[in-house]
Length: 369
Ligand code: OSB
Ligand code: MG
Image 1 (cartoon, helix red, strand yellow):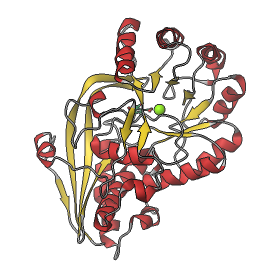
Image 2: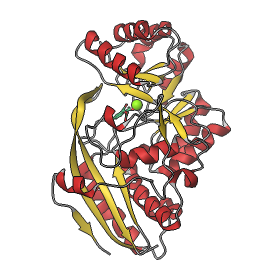
Image 3: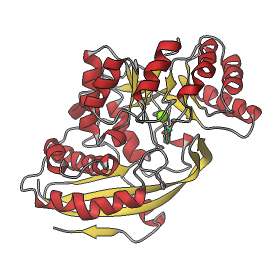
């Protein structure tokens, strides 16, 4: 495959409700899209970086620049580009996994459309639909939180994840557990808001009988996660810390994590995500598919990934209407708490280019060899 152009689109999409985590509050998603034209097909990819470097060191402006100046030239220089070669081709650029993942998604999409294969076939999916959970942001009051959670229960979500931070943890978690009843799947995500000094406090979460606690400490602080895992009955799950298969193996072997959240953007793409899935399956560590408020483009690909055999827990793969009044592709709709895995070539969804143009924040950047 020969790449003829790479176009970077920057769009703004208002969220149906603000999304607050321990690191900030978002009301609109600032999305970078990659549109690839090759000699055989076209592909689209979505960059999951936030507008500021708060979840990780990457952010949208930085991703656009590193694609333009460092990644795209390496792709244009390749003679016969294949998605499987991207890891090696882009390895001279250190880090920047979200930028690489956005390009990888577009390359995979084009390659698969050219060959008539779907993402689910290419990645090794074994299910036609996936169980869905929902990630619930920090609220302004407990009553508002309970209302929001009740709405998701009524929609059929199979698992609730609450964002927590110091000052918003034991009380909201206990109240939501009371609302859901003892058997419902409930988990929490701290996005690195705690320190090792909080271990005794976090142990009190054990009474809520949670599926897991996600990333309580700094992404580089594996040792504190080991200490927490030794002190708490609730399983510890890492998100931000897991940037590659080798880090995953290290964290599992050290006892820092017994469940892993896999996000393709965080780990450099769908093929690296499958590699992490594989090392986890070998070690009997359950995985689930995380989310970054994706549009239909990234969502279609995430749903395909979540259909792999090791994804045994419901993902943050919620329906389009949990995020957006109108999606960039045909919307993903929940049926009995599940989303259907797309089966068409590539991502299996069609990008509404009229909306890409209507929601543009700036003129597209068109790159050529
Ligand atoms: O930590 O999982 C996270 C969103 C943005 C950044 C980080 C996270 C999240 C979510 C939302 O939890 C998951 C989703 O519904 O896409
Ligand atoms: Mg998380």
